Image 1 (tube, rainbow, N blue to C red):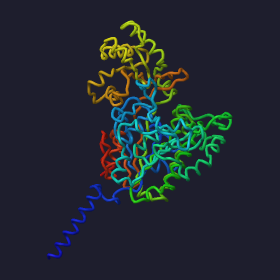
Image 2 (image 1 turned 135 degrees about the vertical axis):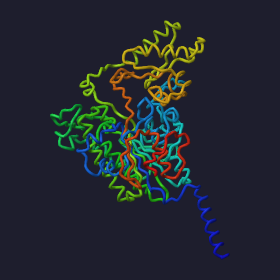
Image 3 (image 1 turned 90 degrees about the vertical axis):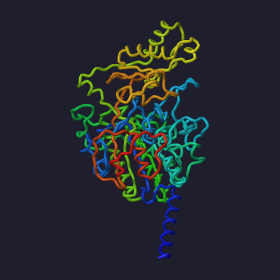
Image 4 (image 1 turned 60 degrees about the vertical axis):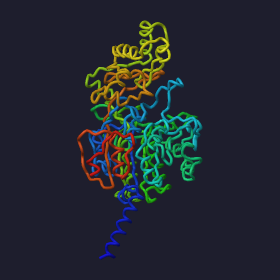
Amino acid sequence: MCVLKRVIFLMLTGLAGVLELNGGQGREDDRPDLVVGIVVDRMRFDYVDRMWDMFGDDGFKRLFSGGTSFTNARYSHMVNQSASGYATIVTGSDPSVHGIIADTWYDRLRNELRNPVYDGQRAAVGGTFQNGMRSPLSMMSGTFGDELRKAADFRSRVYSVSLNDYAAILAGGYSANTSWWYDNSSGSWMTSTFYLDSLPSWVRVFNNSMLPETYLGRVWEPAAHWQSYRPEGTEKNTSPFRHDLRRMRRRGDDYRMLRRTPYGNTFTGDFAQNLILNENLGKGGSTDVIMIGFAATAEISRYYGTFSAELQDAYIRLDLDIAHLLRFLDDHLGMSNVLVFLTSDKGAGYPEAYRQAARQPSGIFSPGIAMTLLRSYLNVSYGEGDWVQAYNAGMVYLNHDLIERSNIPLADIQERSARFLGQLSGVAGAVSEDVLSRNYFNSGINARLQSGFHRARSGDLMIYLRQGWYERSVSGEGIELVDYDPHVPLVFYGWKFEQNKIKREVSVRDIAPTVSILLNISRPAYSTGSPLLEVIR
């Protein structure tokens, strides 16, 4: 009996030691071997349903028929821009916390617009010099990938891939082994010295194949029968499109055009699979992560239209790319060992044809004219002065130095400016920094504005336009629909997930804490999302 007790005691103390060494995080075999996060840029929540009959069985249909999907996933913030979305997905927090308030923001100290991933201390690795000054250090929150790396004593590896630098860098977080993005000038994949000092040999081989040259020499025509496409309205298409990319790309142009073709997504997927294979992801004994951003859909949507035949074709081809990726994961690891989730960086509204059919009023808001009128109003109210410094992404930045020298209470001039801007044609409302800082809103438009407001980076005023209105670019060279649609797709597939469709409202902030619990790690420190119980139970 004494011998038996001693054996049991040794077994229990040994188990306790193992748990202590693992930091209480659980056994490695309780986790998937690989997490694959797929972000399809500017994907409406209903695109899969709308194009269901045009897809094959092994791409979108496989994910949404076999996984746990959430039909009412939404962003909480108002300014619906891509960089903010990527940061929210991986941090589990809003722009008010992670600080990535837009694709660019005005830097008061430098008196210039700031790229969210610009870092002048870094240099290019594999691409042109100016595209290499990049790092994630402007993001103010950690990611689930950062937490995984720490929990595994940095044995786990985290990679990210996107045509867009900010998407790859923000998705990778601080601790990514490497984030990879596309260089327009050379048509190659690149990174920065924040991650590496030189390109791995497999990346050099991939870049030397010059696939963008091949893709941009093609004629882009419908992949499916053109009569099945339903562009812009309810009537079927009357003629197929045909884009000779070689002719469209002028002699001497760089490789930027790849972003506006479905081949940009294929190029991204091929590189991601090469990365998984050459870095041997999922086979190192610890859970690895790869974030893949398919960015071409957003460029095609902006250039051709939200429901254009070109965009529908891009999704048909992306469906094939995703099917190829899933089959590759089947062969590489087996899907029971892979956790896949798919979502989007932002929603997308209805195209102009739908708005006209609904007799919805529309118009064009010109920030340049609005700021000129605001300056004139403030000159009358407070005397001549350069009261307005900048406008960007729905935010107005006032001249704090001038206001302080003039002994004007900042809250007063903010409130006056907000009331004035709220009367302009096309403006649905304007809210001051003072109002957003001093109050807490738990619902409504002001709550969404507050979720996207960061005191150190946002402007003095946040304005939002009436639905259906376009905003002229600050340069005056073009217009773009101002879209506040927060609704995006969300599905979890593979590993231990069952087929299920959840209709309750959830937040994109919930993704990071959910993945963290599934990996038995701490959630990101500033995460404000809630774990999705339908996935983790």
